[in-house]
Image 1 (tube, rainbow, N blue to C red):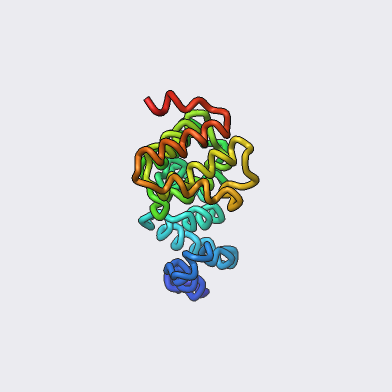
Image 2 (cartoon, rainbow, N blue to C red):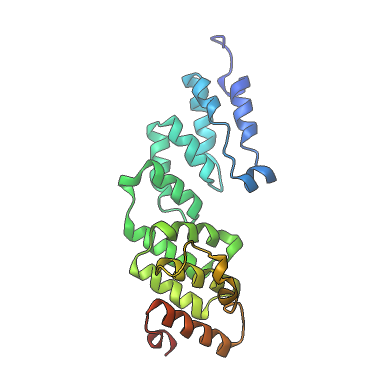
Amino acid sequence: MTPNSDPTNSDRVNRFLQSMVMTFEMWHDGTGYDVDLLKQMTPQERESVEKVLVGHQPRDWRDIEALAMIDSPAARSVIESALKSADPAVRREAMKYAPEKSDPNDREKLIIHAVGTRGLFNGLSETLDEIEEFHTPAIVDALFRGALTGDGDAAVHFAAMLYFLHGKSKEAFDWDHRPFFLRFNTANRDERRAAFKELCETVGVDAEPYMR
């Protein structure tokens, strides 16, 4: 790059910005931005990309991955702020790069909120992934309440996760137990309560406090 060239309009910068354009394949396959290009950039080029990433909204986990590679003071500040993101994918990515800054209490509150309010296609699936590795008693309690009173589709996955967390299945959604989990996908209150009682009996938890 010549001294008078514009770092915001270089081939490497343009190729990176193009890699930020979300496609179905990127979303479906979990593909990140072309961060290898960042290694090839001049400091001026990385700075121009950093400005775009810092201002990118809505924040994506891919932004955090790229900012972690840039590793400037501004980039680190964004990553630290992302630890409190309502988006579990963004939060999990930030925790890869700033685990020492993560507040378990904040993380717990965000997960409990997601369990109570989000659907499977609105971030709850990612939250369930997070629960596999981080499940405080309060989070487990929220799962029980969701299994009893939550949306049917979500309750199916709450029941499956509770089986897993209590050592009754080998994975977070064990297909060997799928017929039982599917019993939670009902609007019939009596059917849901019956499935919930059976769940609690299986995992060794008293159902009565939840059913009062």
